[in-house]
Image (cartoon, rainbow over all chains, first blue to last red; front, side):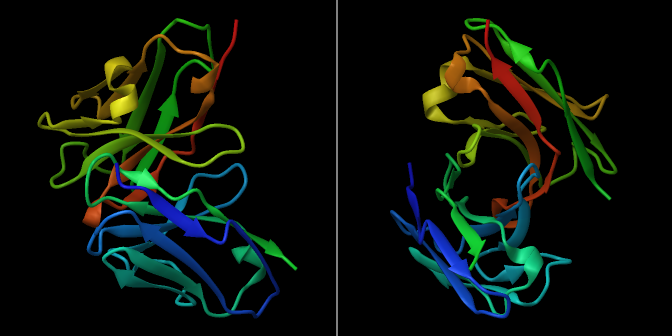
Length: 107
Length: 119
């Protein structure tokens, strides 16, 4: 199985801050990577697919980059509604695997 | 707008079989080129993919669960189902169904169904 490792596990930030979350795959997944936002009691919401493509309806302050084994999710200017948990997901190869999550908390 | 809705018992006894159904509306489960998936999330923990299938028959399951999983589809009802046998407390989780789209990203999700395994 491809292991996905996110860092940091948690991060504290303020409204207006720029935040970057990283995800590393244990082997090359080219660009088969997605990012999700999950709020308590809700299903995950797709933000980014194919490593850098913004899902329809997602604000442009979210962006993704990377290929191969190293990927990043950047929130350019944090808004109050962005405090949530973020997951990366690889789908280059079955079984699909997720990172362990990054909790974004208000400072 | 595509919508998915999980249904089934919220409480299952240990050693019995968990059975859930995902009903899809606003689109056809037979639409190419989509896979459909089951994912679960134990309380307070991360996301775990369970399995995916294509309506024509291709199925992929998580290896550690493979012997216990059955995923089936009823195209006439636009539904797909998950059966997980011999459950234990470790199978307690919120179970989600979802669609796999471009680059296998999971773009539409159901609201989730909490299933507790307890006697």
